[in-house]
Image 1 (spheres, rainbow, N blue to C red):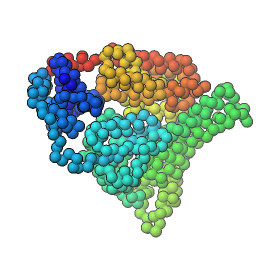
Image 2: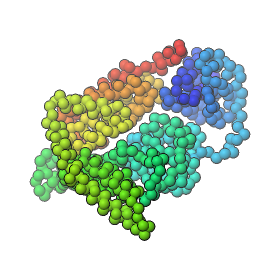
Image 3: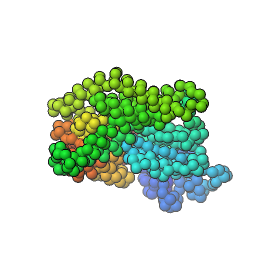
Image 4: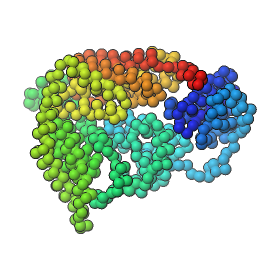
Length: 577
């Protein structure tokens, strides 16, 4: 007999997961062909396919609290009961369900009300993995819940699947899952909920349900009026402002680094000969692209804080930080100085209505630039330049022991939360050092960032029997994502088994980071994964660098393949409980 089992509980945690496992085990003992849909945060929801529903001869629902939407099972023999009786005696509960099931009738209100309509935006600093994976998670989950949704992705290639004015007008709620600042002016007057890409990716159902219950009407802030405490609480924090600056700086760094690497094809010092192609490439990459890194970082930090009026003072402050030798730390400081100064002028300085239009083009750029520039020259620039010089000298001349220690720290941070705040902090630090021609930490960061996804792919190959079919397929995809330097490929495994996956990944990442620094590997381009390996001179110590990545990925894969518990092993404690 083909049987479908649905389990759910209010918290979405242990009860639902345990009920799913014990009921599946009991049904198989009775010779039933069974499929289970478990609504729990301990495992991703795998919804029934239309073919499974069509073939089902019986649908059993163990639910605590509110009953899930069962409209897809209309006409099927269905039995709905509490989750606790199913846990107490699963075999008896199954027999009771088979005996008492009756055809599910459509509810009177079914089809009378229009479905919930959602629109969403996803955006992350690099505009690659989290942006698109969180969009996919929101889209798939909304469809399972019976909601209409359209998700705009603001990735590295610009906005895709852009929301139209009609989409926004028809939406019941707006979800903004972004780690960087995005323009919300078009959502003025709509119910809006803000979160990060991480929660949207890992807990999409919780994100959607929270948005529908907690979203508040968004009012675009007036540049000349002070806003209340509630509005201030909803604004992005300093961390998001920093990531916004990093996201705009990254394309500059990637392009500049690769062009510099191309100049090295003609020889490491060929660019010193004026008039040659190597010199032209170095002028484009090093003299222009890398020279703009810090001004762009500073300008877009200020933009995130104060919108367009912050760009001019932010870039001016960033250029001063660069010329004063204050490096990326000075650029970060100038960005925050310019941004908060510009915002203060916009919100707190009253102007006659006749002169209000002059604020964004004259008053704010003039006084914010003066303030930021003078503070950078007379207060911040000198001390920060000294700090940067000492740090750069230390990094370029440190012994093997210190290099290994730094590699361990960067590698472990890159693998701790796979695209989360700790990962991004290590990555931003490494990218920032490129401005001072310090390339070792960047090599360690990218190598370690490839380890989690590669390691999970290796683990599913080494211990194939411990992984179910879905996990095996996820392992193949994870391995490919790892090659592309997309750590997020390991997130499905970490979400299901964090206490084993995360330490395994951190061990491999620490080893890779340590070996990369020990071997003296240097990376000029901060992204690209395995594809950068084929660009001549983009990586120094290429063979040793590949060895470092391989060693860390193998360590992660072997450790997790040993620590991993199969579904059958996980069932044993649940059944005994």
